[in-house]
Length: 326
Image (cartoon, rainbow, N blue to C red; front, side):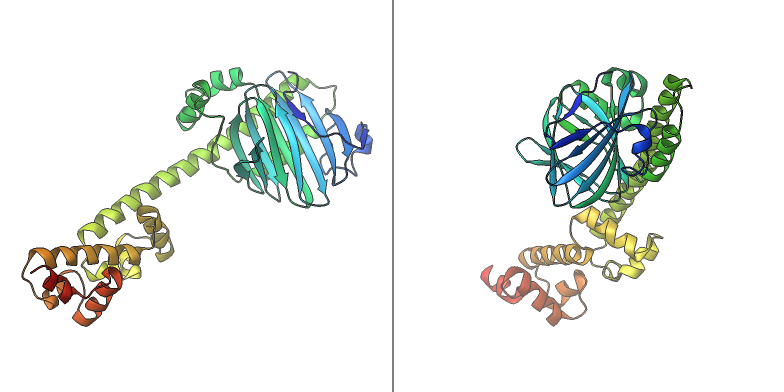
């Protein structure tokens, strides 16, 4: 398959180093790959490319002097599996609007529609493996995978210019497999070896993705349980005690804090205060209960503390609210 990803910069110097000259340029010289070594004002770039009818395999080694932007063009709609070593980079649309970040030491699956893009990275050394995958093969092989349904449907329906799935931490395994591939000679059945490597990379990603989605589903369900419990028991002591509430749900306090933020989009104590204040306001306006009774009803043992919290929330003491309503 002809490469459909083109770097758009013009190097000051371009060299095509043979295999035995790449050892000082990359920690993973690929025997089966063609290589281009480009020298620019702000960076030196080694690109090792292996063309396969299902995907292009490209290993990029960047030695960047200052913050660096790579202009590139995708000439047809493609799926990408990217593994980034050490540092992170950001993919931009051509108008410099950031699309997403590829975190360091992670692997990410995404698609890009045909167009011009930019990739920015900080000064230092970066190593990135890119698999640009033929859509027809990817869809025919993985269309029935539940974790990929929304992803593939979006691609087929042209819903978005780009779509990324979560990043997963399988970079080391993928680069270890790449090293094995790099040491192979051209006397072997290269077609089979490349096919195995491609399938292995995608399978590793999907396995980790599935495990992560199970975790996400669990967290979403647990967050929903916490939200329902707090709504029903906002006036009880337990919702004001993170350690006790965490014990009730058989999770750590740290996990409780994280799940409460997921459920309420704010810290738990802020949400509890909000519930208590609004219920106390309703009681003030619709009942004849005393301030002390209302304070106790919404979870405050000290009515003076309740009055201060009420004034902080609404800007007026609770007794004045009742006077205004007479």
